[in-house]
Image 1: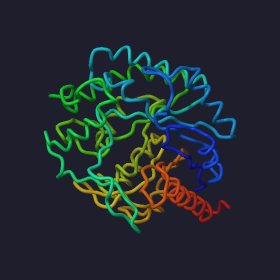
Image 2 (image 1 turned 90 degrees about the vertical axis):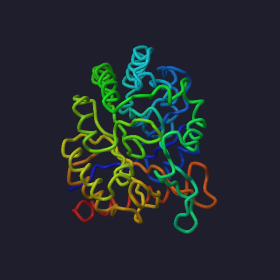
Image 3 (image 1 turned 135 degrees about the vertical axis):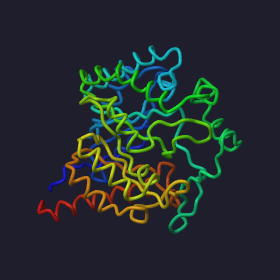
Image 4 (image 1 turned 45 degrees about the horizontal axis):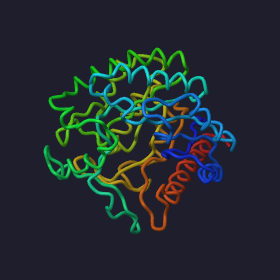
Length: 345
């Protein structure tokens, strides 16, 4: 079972020489950018993408994936609001531009909100600081939840509580079908894969806001909608672990991986499951990272793996260079050992 999994550097918005050297010195040749800081309020132009791609390639790196366009690029699509058709056409043009440039993957989520945590200062190993979530601290109408939304208000052009009032999971799935029916033919023609990320945390509803992708059953429903060779899953192992620990992670890998629908993997873990969990270093969470990686190999996964959320280590940068170096080296070592154990030296 020789692994063709590749570790990429991800989860950053701005590319510069420091980021390039960081990747290269870690032995990484591919990058993924999350909502890259590109000009444009509605669309990423061919010229803007081309300029960034050329800068990346000037260091001998490959731009393998983008995760997420800004939420304001397709918020009306998610909520089924007037103006969604214009947003869909702009999204299709971004896909076409990526295809022309050979950027093969675009990740997306379908949540009207963001990743949520109730603290960023939970005590972790050796005094590192971790994010954590406690559902008991969030109730519909709670001031704490509304205050968190207010801090994100500049990213939206609507009041999210008014927009989602009365919205159900079925409504979100209907809106997702409308979106996929429009963009998947473009993605197929452009040669760009669309990877769906789950809601984080994977709660059906909290703070009065509905969510769409919170379980394997939800992914099955989304997979029926995204019935295309250009559609797949961004498998967030952290979200799996938040939902149901080791068993949930293995179930997701076996079902989605067995159907060749895993396009990328976020490799992180947490301690505890909903309603309360805390992020942690690899190897001290709900699952055994080696078992998870081996299971990915068993289902024939040959895609990209990246570090995801990391703890805040003392004296680290805002991006988390120290913590990310640890996670990346951990994953690289596991892949090499798996290949060695299988006779691929």
